[in-house]
Amino acid sequence: MGMMDDITALAKRRGFIYPGSEIYGGITGFWDYGPLGVELKNNIKRQWWQAMVYEREDVVGLDAAIVMNPAVWEASGHVSGFTDPLVECKTCHKRFRADKPEQLEQHTAAHDGKSEWTNAKKFNLLTEVLLGITEPKELTYLRGEITQGVFVNFKNVVDSTRVKIPFGIAQIGKAFRNEITPGNFTFRSREFEQMELEYFIKPDEKEGQKIFKYWKEDRMKWYVSLGMTKTKLRFREHEPDERAHYAQKAEDIEYEAPFGWSEFEGIHHRGDWDLSRHKLTYTDSQSNEVYTPWVIETSGGVDRATLFFLVDAYVQEEKRIVLKLHPKLAPVKVAVFPLVANKDTIIGKAKEVYAVLKKKFVTAWDDRGNIGKRYLSQDEVGTPWCVTIDYDTLESDTVTVRDRDTTKQDRVNVSKLVEYFSSKLEE
Ligand code: ATP
Image (cartoon, rainbow, N blue to C red):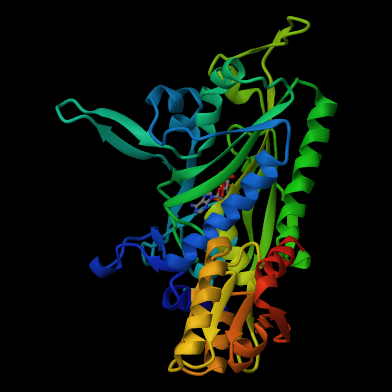
């Protein structure tokens, strides 16, 4: 697990991800995103929204509340069916998920092959919340998936916008699960963020299959388009007995993480499960036909995507650590360096360049140590370009632009810099 330890350490040292509540000893399964982490995560969410909402004609957005009437969770089947099976090792009383055989095998091996397990017991993953200030308080739940907020607003969206089936509702937001085994850094947390599309179609077996295939391929392409290594990605279809209570068909997108192939997005055929449970139907405005639409869902984890973009970008070269993040995802796009920190003319010019770039791109300033050290520091956080203002700049109004991946340098006119980076970001 060397690489995961290295990435966890880098994430903390450089302000990507910190353990939650750390100064009080932490809290299992909760993580805080630092100044660079929030930029990376926001960039992922922004790119997702761009592709899933803005660039499409058939998808609208939504941001539903985290806490809902508990009747939603009764109807959706989560109160009775949103469970994971738990087993306990009889020797050391450690708890595991019975449906993750690799972990059980690993643990058994640690006890020289002699582990005995308790019978599997089902545990509900919903996190309870008590509302109100006087007794009896009202029991409800933090949402265990963001999806239900979309279904309960299905009628609102149809009535208040011009969407017609087929159409989708996209949403990004926090979800909470009382996970039995939080771990692998942020991979399995108790609080996490999801980015989901619920795509509503007219019930039809063939159409359902076609749309399912379309979305699973579209989602895979999206990760590749943002730089994830194709050979580290694969689909994995769920066996009937591992599908969630709502799913007719499910395929995961998995990444080959240092801890093994791991799901970070699920494509689910939810059929009419949810809308029929909420007693919602759709009326075709032309034919007046009334039916319960089917739903094809793409359900991605923002934190897992962030983690795997980081893992995938992490390269340990002989003389440096580089995060080869796609420029669109990189937390900082440009860093500006005055060659020396004690020459007013150079500092003044660098500040001018910095002020111009800062209005257009997330831009960092660094005047510490030598230029080589500053490059290394930016490489480690994935900044694609570094701009150095030197003595020549004062004469020719040009600067050096150094590329993170090739380490090659370009000489660019100050007046052309914004255009230069804008077009690079569009590549
Ligand atoms: P797993 O089998 O790993 O528990 P799941 O199949 O229960 O995951 P879904 O319910 O399909 O996951 O959730 C959709 C997405 O939400 C997942 O692909 C993942 O990216 C994200 N997700 C789910 N649970 C967690 C968690 N505990 N921590 C971080 N992300 C999560």
